[in-house]
Image: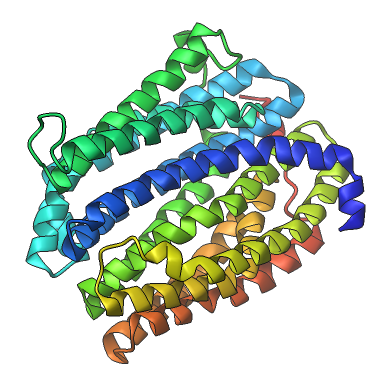
Length: 455
């Protein structure tokens, strides 16, 4: 660690990128926490309904994240070459593909809300409330696409602060509008779960307006004319999908895996769903540091590969690989100590409170190794252009190990939700074996922008 701390260029770059991204992710996670705290006052059925409805939005978000991440691989490497026109071209393709996904997911949420909820829960009241929530937030899918697309371009060009400010505006608006619509303040009738959905939709709209306005009003380097955004051709699209398909599949199938866990928890009961919803939301508040480090790693490695400085990219990968578990250990200690205090504000039964604290402490124990895994898959390998290998590792461990184990524990062995979650977490130990081997091999370094020259 002493050698790492002496590398001032590495530390400065890492912190400059990681801290704003971390703060943005913290703000985004706060939005979910605000929703859960306020909705929590309506009872466990409301928590479960919104949690499961947001599981569908989570699938969409990870599909969109896959599209954005695939584009970011190219934009980061183009930024290393200072090729701004190509960044704009990738941004246009990113937004276009994301728009198609937004229409598909948003349309399904509007038309098939009840059917979607019935796949996630057997509780009629949870299905009813969740369906109502999904129908209202369906329009926000399109706004989210534009926000995330432009945010990816800004972060890839080492401008993470503007997306952070946009997220802050979104969270503050969401908290205030929750207070207005959920409980009926300022002369508005109480709307309950529907009010939370309306507040979230308005907040996401304002977030999009702010980020696009600031980009074009200040003539940011990613501000693009329509002609520049749609300068891509079929050859360019093929090259993009050669690298990005694996990332999109990774995010989408991983999200489906997380949803499968939720279905397994629902086999245990609504209390188990509420337990995991609260624990996951709280844990995500702490894991934003790891996600921020992973995002910074992806950009740093991608920039150096694009600039043909592969030896520095390798050096960065090993240094970040040492920082990640140390950061995870620190987070784990904090989560373990604070678990009872941070669960106490939720309006849940005593048994649910106890289970949530236990799950949070399992998360705390596994945090160092999970932090390393996240940084390798989302950061180093993805930034290096090695998208297929990381996808195979991620999906192999989730779908061929963790998901079957979850259903074995919940539906066949009928063990408590705390035990089911612990069994799922053992997947992390399998994953690290493959990641260590790949990192040492150096095969993860792939200059993807070289393939685009013909396009």
